Image (cartoon, rainbow, N blue to C red; front, side, top):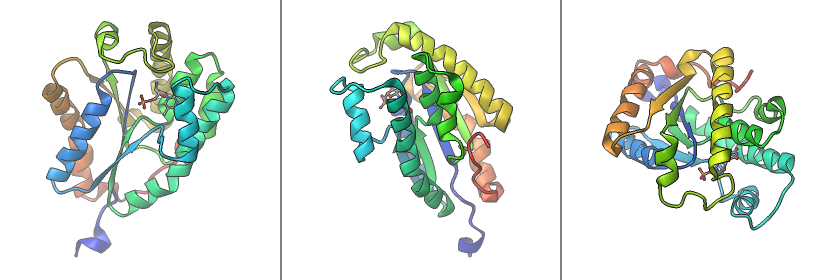
Length: 223
Ligand code: NYM
Protein backbone atom coordinates (compact mmCIF):
# COMPACT_ATOMS: atom_id res chain seq x y z
CA UNK A 1 0.00 0.00 0.00
CA UNK A 2 2.94 2.31 0.56
CA UNK A 3 4.38 2.06 -2.94
CA UNK A 4 2.10 4.43 -4.86
CA UNK A 5 1.84 6.99 -2.06
CA UNK A 6 5.38 6.68 -0.72
CA UNK A 7 7.19 9.97 -0.38
CA UNK A 8 10.53 10.46 -2.04
CA UNK A 9 13.78 10.41 -0.13
CA UNK A 10 15.19 13.56 1.45
CA UNK A 11 18.31 15.17 -0.01
CA UNK A 12 20.50 16.25 2.91
CA UNK A 13 23.86 17.97 2.39
CA UNK A 14 26.66 18.52 4.92
CA UNK A 15 29.12 21.34 4.43
CA UNK A 16 31.95 22.82 6.45
CA UNK A 17 35.63 23.63 6.50
CA UNK A 18 38.19 20.85 6.50
CA UNK A 19 38.48 18.84 9.77
CA UNK A 20 35.13 20.00 11.15
CA UNK A 21 34.00 16.44 11.91
CA UNK A 22 31.63 16.31 8.97
CA UNK A 23 32.62 12.89 7.67
CA UNK A 24 32.19 11.30 11.12
CA UNK A 25 28.74 12.84 11.50
CA UNK A 26 27.67 11.89 8.00
CA UNK A 27 28.43 8.20 8.48
CA UNK A 28 26.77 8.14 11.91
CA UNK A 29 23.67 9.75 10.42
CA UNK A 30 23.41 7.13 7.68
CA UNK A 31 23.58 4.38 10.35
CA UNK A 32 20.97 6.10 12.50
CA UNK A 33 18.58 6.53 9.58
CA UNK A 34 18.92 2.87 8.68
CA UNK A 35 18.22 1.87 12.29
CA UNK A 36 15.00 3.88 11.97
CA UNK A 37 14.07 1.84 8.93
CA UNK A 38 14.91 4.35 6.23
CA UNK A 39 17.11 3.53 3.26
CA UNK A 40 19.94 6.02 3.04
CA UNK A 41 22.91 6.38 0.72
CA UNK A 42 26.09 8.32 1.39
CA UNK A 43 27.40 10.37 -1.53
CA UNK A 44 30.80 11.96 -1.07
CA UNK A 45 31.91 14.94 -3.13
CA UNK A 46 34.34 14.90 -4.71
CA UNK A 47 33.44 11.32 -5.67
CA UNK A 48 37.01 10.14 -6.22
CA UNK A 49 35.96 6.79 -7.72
CA UNK A 50 35.09 8.09 -11.21
CA UNK A 51 37.54 9.03 -13.99
CA UNK A 52 36.94 12.74 -13.28
CA UNK A 53 37.19 12.03 -9.56
CA UNK A 54 40.62 10.51 -10.04
CA UNK A 55 41.83 13.69 -11.74
CA UNK A 56 40.48 15.69 -8.80
CA UNK A 57 42.15 13.33 -6.34
CA UNK A 58 45.51 13.74 -8.08
CA UNK A 59 45.09 17.52 -7.96
CA UNK A 60 44.18 17.56 -4.25
CA UNK A 61 47.15 15.37 -3.36
CA UNK A 62 49.41 17.66 -5.44
CA UNK A 63 50.25 14.84 -7.85
CA UNK A 64 48.93 17.02 -10.67
CA UNK A 65 48.68 20.73 -11.32
CA UNK A 66 45.69 22.28 -13.00
CA UNK A 67 44.40 25.68 -14.03
CA UNK A 68 42.09 27.08 -11.30
CA UNK A 69 39.08 27.31 -13.62
CA UNK A 70 39.70 23.89 -15.14
CA UNK A 71 39.75 22.17 -11.73
CA UNK A 72 36.68 24.13 -10.68
CA UNK A 73 34.78 22.83 -13.69
CA UNK A 74 35.94 19.27 -12.99
CA UNK A 75 34.52 19.48 -9.44
CA UNK A 76 31.24 20.60 -11.00
CA UNK A 77 31.36 17.92 -13.71
CA UNK A 78 31.91 15.37 -10.94
CA UNK A 79 28.54 16.44 -9.46
CA UNK A 80 26.81 16.40 -12.83
CA UNK A 81 27.92 12.84 -13.52
CA UNK A 82 26.22 11.82 -10.23
CA UNK A 83 23.08 13.96 -10.64
CA UNK A 84 20.88 11.47 -12.48
CA UNK A 85 21.57 8.74 -9.90
CA UNK A 86 20.73 11.16 -7.07
CA UNK A 87 17.39 12.08 -8.67
CA UNK A 88 16.60 8.44 -9.37
CA UNK A 89 17.37 7.31 -5.83
CA UNK A 90 15.38 10.17 -4.28
CA UNK A 91 12.40 9.24 -6.46
CA UNK A 92 12.73 5.65 -5.22
CA UNK A 93 12.47 6.76 -1.60
CA UNK A 94 16.17 6.64 -0.78
CA UNK A 95 17.51 9.42 1.44
CA UNK A 96 20.73 10.86 0.06
CA UNK A 97 23.29 12.21 2.51
CA UNK A 98 25.97 14.20 0.70
CA UNK A 99 29.37 14.90 2.28
CA UNK A 100 29.97 18.28 0.53
CA UNK A 101 28.26 19.60 -2.59
CA UNK A 102 28.17 22.66 -4.85
CA UNK A 103 28.55 25.00 -1.85
CA UNK A 104 32.07 23.72 -1.20
CA UNK A 105 32.68 24.14 -4.90
CA UNK A 106 31.93 27.86 -4.73
CA UNK A 107 33.54 28.55 -1.36
CA UNK A 108 36.90 26.89 -2.04
CA UNK A 109 37.29 28.22 -5.60
CA UNK A 110 36.15 31.74 -4.73
CA UNK A 111 38.62 31.66 -1.82
CA UNK A 112 41.37 31.22 -4.42
CA UNK A 113 40.19 34.42 -6.09
CA UNK A 114 37.89 33.21 -8.89
CA UNK A 115 34.79 35.39 -9.42
CA UNK A 116 31.85 34.26 -7.29
CA UNK A 117 29.44 34.06 -10.24
CA UNK A 118 31.87 32.02 -12.31
CA UNK A 119 32.05 29.60 -9.38
CA UNK A 120 28.28 29.40 -8.94
CA UNK A 121 27.08 29.08 -12.54
CA UNK A 122 28.25 25.60 -13.64
CA UNK A 123 26.16 23.94 -10.88
CA UNK A 124 22.93 25.66 -11.92
CA UNK A 125 20.03 23.16 -12.09
CA UNK A 126 21.73 20.37 -10.16
CA UNK A 127 19.35 18.59 -7.74
CA UNK A 128 18.44 21.09 -4.99
CA UNK A 129 19.18 19.84 -1.45
CA UNK A 130 16.16 19.88 0.88
CA UNK A 131 18.48 21.08 3.61
CA UNK A 132 22.17 21.88 4.00
CA UNK A 133 23.77 21.61 7.43
CA UNK A 134 26.83 23.81 7.72
CA UNK A 135 29.10 22.58 10.53
CA UNK A 136 31.11 25.26 12.28
CA UNK A 137 34.09 24.59 14.49
CA UNK A 138 36.56 26.84 16.23
CA UNK A 139 39.53 27.31 13.80
CA UNK A 140 42.04 26.49 16.54
CA UNK A 141 40.45 23.12 17.27
CA UNK A 142 40.16 22.34 13.55
CA UNK A 143 43.83 23.02 12.83
CA UNK A 144 44.90 20.83 15.78
CA UNK A 145 43.10 17.79 14.41
CA UNK A 146 45.21 15.01 12.93
CA UNK A 147 46.19 15.17 9.27
CA UNK A 148 45.43 18.86 8.86
CA UNK A 149 47.70 20.18 6.13
CA UNK A 150 48.02 16.98 4.12
CA UNK A 151 46.02 18.09 1.10
CA UNK A 152 45.83 21.19 -1.01
CA UNK A 153 43.74 23.99 0.60
CA UNK A 154 44.50 22.81 4.13
CA UNK A 155 46.28 25.96 5.28
CA UNK A 156 45.03 28.46 7.85
CA UNK A 157 44.96 31.24 5.26
CA UNK A 158 42.89 29.20 2.81
CA UNK A 159 40.48 28.02 5.53
CA UNK A 160 39.97 31.60 6.74
CA UNK A 161 39.20 32.83 3.29
CA UNK A 162 36.93 29.83 2.56
CA UNK A 163 34.97 30.59 5.73
CA UNK A 164 34.28 34.10 4.44
CA UNK A 165 33.08 32.70 1.12
CA UNK A 166 30.81 30.17 2.86
CA UNK A 167 29.06 33.12 4.54
CA UNK A 168 28.30 34.56 1.09
CA UNK A 169 27.15 31.16 -0.16
CA UNK A 170 24.75 30.92 2.81
CA UNK A 171 23.27 34.31 1.91
CA UNK A 172 22.79 33.18 -1.67
CA UNK A 173 21.00 29.97 -0.63
CA UNK A 174 18.66 31.86 1.71
CA UNK A 175 17.95 34.53 -0.92
CA UNK A 176 17.20 32.08 -3.73
CA UNK A 177 15.72 29.13 -1.87
CA UNK A 178 14.57 30.37 1.54
CA UNK A 179 15.97 30.20 5.04
CA UNK A 180 14.85 26.61 5.70
CA UNK A 181 17.39 25.31 3.19
CA UNK A 182 20.50 26.30 5.20
CA UNK A 183 21.20 25.54 8.85
CA UNK A 184 24.35 26.28 10.78
CA UNK A 185 25.34 23.59 13.30
CA UNK A 186 27.77 24.16 16.17
CA UNK A 187 30.25 21.30 15.72
CA UNK A 188 32.13 22.01 18.95
CA UNK A 189 31.63 19.27 21.50
CA UNK A 190 31.53 15.50 21.65
CA UNK A 191 30.58 13.26 18.72
CA UNK A 192 27.29 12.21 20.36
CA UNK A 193 26.42 15.74 21.40
CA UNK A 194 26.92 17.10 17.87
CA UNK A 195 25.09 14.07 16.45
CA UNK A 196 22.05 14.80 18.62
CA UNK A 197 22.10 18.45 17.52
CA UNK A 198 22.05 17.31 13.90
CA UNK A 199 19.28 14.79 14.52
CA UNK A 200 17.19 17.49 16.16
CA UNK A 201 17.60 19.83 13.20
CA UNK A 202 16.63 17.11 10.73
CA UNK A 203 13.59 15.85 12.62
CA UNK A 204 11.09 18.29 11.04
CA UNK A 205 12.20 17.37 7.53
CA UNK A 206 12.18 13.64 8.18
CA UNK A 207 8.76 13.79 9.87
CA UNK A 208 7.46 15.87 6.99
CA UNK A 209 8.65 12.99 4.79
CA UNK A 210 6.51 10.54 6.71
CA UNK A 211 3.59 12.91 6.41
CA UNK A 212 4.05 13.04 2.65
CA UNK A 213 5.56 16.53 2.50
CA UNK A 214 8.48 15.28 0.47
CA UNK A 215 6.13 14.42 -2.39
CA UNK A 216 6.98 17.78 -3.89
CA UNK A 217 9.50 17.49 -6.68
CA UNK A 218 13.21 17.81 -6.08
CA UNK A 219 14.05 21.37 -7.10
CA UNK A 220 16.87 22.75 -9.20
CA UNK A 221 19.82 24.51 -7.58
CA UNK A 222 19.94 28.30 -8.09
CA UNK A 223 16.86 28.21 -10.34
N1 NYM B 1 36.46 20.83 -2.67
C1 NYM B 1 35.40 19.99 -2.61
C2 NYM B 1 36.53 21.83 -3.65
O1 NYM B 1 37.48 22.60 -3.70
N2 NYM B 1 35.50 21.94 -4.55
C3 NYM B 1 34.42 21.10 -4.53
O2 NYM B 1 33.52 21.24 -5.37
C4 NYM B 1 34.36 20.08 -3.52
C5 NYM B 1 33.20 19.14 -3.47
O3 NYM B 1 38.10 19.38 -1.94
N3 NYM B 1 39.37 20.60 0.84
C6 NYM B 1 37.57 20.66 -1.75
C7 NYM B 1 37.23 20.72 -0.29
C8 NYM B 1 38.25 19.82 0.37
C9 NYM B 1 38.70 18.88 -0.73
O4 NYM B 1 37.24 17.25 0.23
C10 NYM B 1 38.33 17.43 -0.56
P1 NYM B 1 37.17 16.03 1.28
O5 NYM B 1 35.84 16.23 1.95
O6 NYM B 1 38.35 16.21 2.21
O7 NYM B 1 37.26 14.75 0.48
